[in-house]
Length: 322
Ligand code: SF4
Ligand code: MG
Image (cartoon, rainbow, N blue to C red; front, side, top):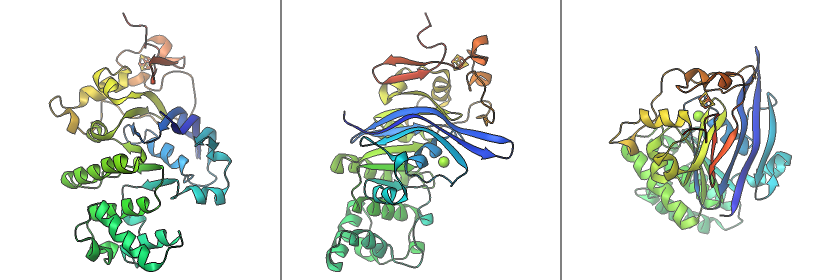
């Protein structure tokens, strides 16, 4: 397993009116070459913030970042805007929930993908041929006709295919996908998922997948990190965690999934809500929702415990049960 991306004790605080918001706290994880690492959690848990920090897309100046973001051995936090420009797209691609935000409404989608390809200094005909091939790679129906369409003429699923084609045109080693199928219906979601699986196989693209959908995770992820209130509470091999969730929060999430349709289950909200942490005080952030909370959970930070190879859990109880 060759390491591609490593987050090393990453913390992100936002200045807000009443002090600061601890959006991400002490998150460490690794995405290896060619693997899918899924970050899962309820909305507001900080998973998107983690993803966006890698691309340097956080809102400007309002946040304080600590820790390292190591991509291929280099700390991206030390890169200036120009160096990041070279990384973005070419080495790290990104797809979002809503492709319309990233597409220019006044150009054809094929033209927009061609533009990305023309950065490689190929001639226009060659670029167009590549566009059509990429559209076929992402199973765009009537590839040639669609390449000449404008974004508003396409369905949500087709637009997401355009975004994936655009991302593929640069052949990045890492794709960050932030809720890529959340806005799509189930059939289209399954198709986009198949395309992502193919990418992984054919192009060996590593994917950091941000989602609240355990169905997606079960389908595509190799490893998984579960986030709660800005912290990664458990991470490890997807089968291991599905078979034997260790953190009380992960267990509750798993129990909330309908048993028979576990693999299709969307993450249901369990009782209570993700707290907004504006003052850092010691103690487990999950304590007020945790069925196992003990006195020390409220006043001492839980340790990150090594459960097995590459399986970590942030909890006072881990390893202490009979
Ligand atoms: Fe529950 Fe305590 Fe573990 Fe937090 S540290 S998850 S409160 S048992
Ligand atoms: Mg989000």
